Image (cartoon, rainbow, N blue to C red; front, top):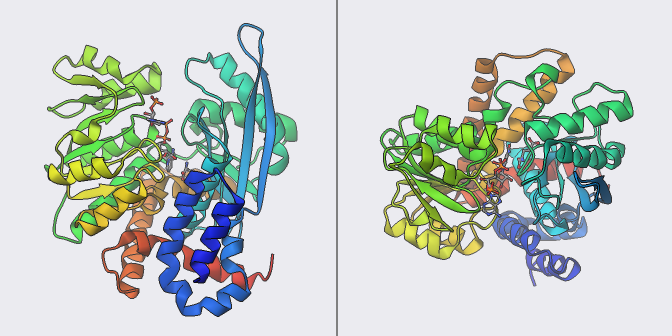
Length: 444
Ligand code: NDP
Ligand code: 2IT
């Protein structure tokens, strides 16, 4: 059996029930075959893949807090410190009832390659809790965040592990987490990113993931003599990534006609009015269905179904495995020619294979959504030098980073004889730097 297959079998056997982790590992290992098979003996002897797929550390803890009725609640808390070969662990915290160790391991594993692709010195990590922020009061969210940080602070630090936001974690949560870290340690340091602008945050971090996604789409189009001008776009989700992907796509002349949340989707044939969405999601924390009250010409439909709307470009920006083979076939049948992932692993493996086999241009999440973490690293830099850069400066750097990621990914695909296959390109390009650093640092 090949080394790659052997390691994958071990991952499944040793981590039963972590199906999202299996999926992420399989995709990466399948891409790396081209590199590994050529150096199989060397890599096997060093157990390089075994070290790559095993987190350096998984911290798991109890998070007790008191709700508004005086009832004690208990959640699970985690931090997966996956790989620190090229820098301190870096990656978001997710608060969602679905969170478990397998999901955080898949996210931490993806983060290792994504962070490498940014070209910045950041290792990979991820954390979170099965706490559900929906319907909780501000006080309850604060109580949870303070309890979560009371355990987590022991394991993080500006040069050690720097968490940030992800699903369910935005500016409000980062604020409460930061306040508690500072209170416990007495340190005013860049231990979290996505901070508010009055206490060390970076301009353009909020916009960065969505903007970066559209910058890389723009590169994919430009390389083929095309542009976003006049293109019809679907964006799933209606959170941080979806909102700012929509904003940038609109700025570049595209028409975004749909968004969704976990309850249903809106279709606005005239183009989404983003100020209405921002008010619903960022200010009122309400459901997307409210949109049709402000824009009666739009249509709200309960349930899944956003991918059935005809489009040129699809940007899945909600969550893992939200787009399956049937959805991919529907997109293709309706004329969609480009998919780029704002979310982490939103396409199932079958959908990904379908894009590649049917000529749909496809940019996987670890390249396409890397603008968020890249700008987090720029926030860390600003914190270290105790300066703040202008919006234009950060945005220009973000744009450069996305242009470079596109070039790196396209180049790696070409070098390995699979031009245009950005899945293989992203995995190999991300892997090369991490492995070089791991080899240099010996058996650790
Ligand atoms: P938010 O919490 O701001 O928004 C998440 C959106 O996705 C909401 O509209 C939410 O709907 C929807 N969603 C979440 N879970 C599900 C689900 N199980 N089924 C259907 N819809 C769901 O998160 P972000 O925008 O920050 O994150 C979105 C994706 O982007 C995630 O995959 C995240 O890992 C990834 N990402 C985020 C980055 C960042 O900087 N924030 C950086 C790179 C990637 P509802 O409100 O109904 O739950
Ligand atoms: O998935 C991701 O890259 C993020 N949630 C952002 C991580 C970060 O550290 O900014």
